[in-house]
Image 1 (cartoon, one colour):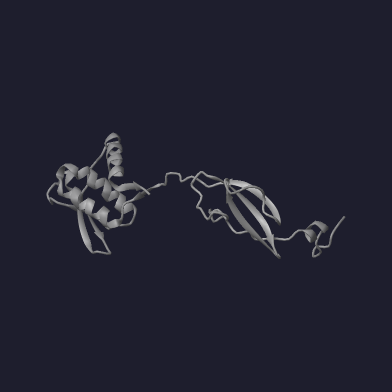
Image 2 (cartoon, helix red, strand yellow; image 1 turned 120 degrees about the horizontal axis):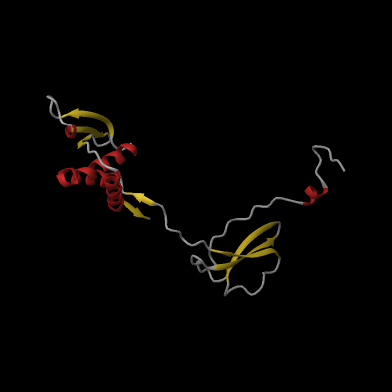
Length: 180
């Protein structure tokens, strides 16, 4: 059977679209909030010309309410550990200043500096030679600016091997990231 393009099929005539609200994760009967991982029952109940979703804890569920169109069991999602979040900008800049004050932390300061450039927290990287006559390779310095606060940072360039950079990256992650 072929239907004209604008005419509805018999099945489409029968079907209607309804919008059912999302679970509020609270028991309809006891008003208790469901805990992560807890199973609960949801029912779609006809009220006049509307369909209303009602959620029930396992304890409060006996049988579906009157006028129930359909029901099912669900589970509240458990909170998975979130992606680690980088510390706020002011903490990052304070950490960089602290690292720059300690010559033994020069490599860590350089790695943090690269992270801040990548995140566009520090800008205008330009290389400056400290000594003008035949400068050694380790005298190269990055001059960086945090534009919102107009703070300048002079960060010595360090040459790191892969093992050293992995260890420093791990140390930096512990220092700057939190799970929340």
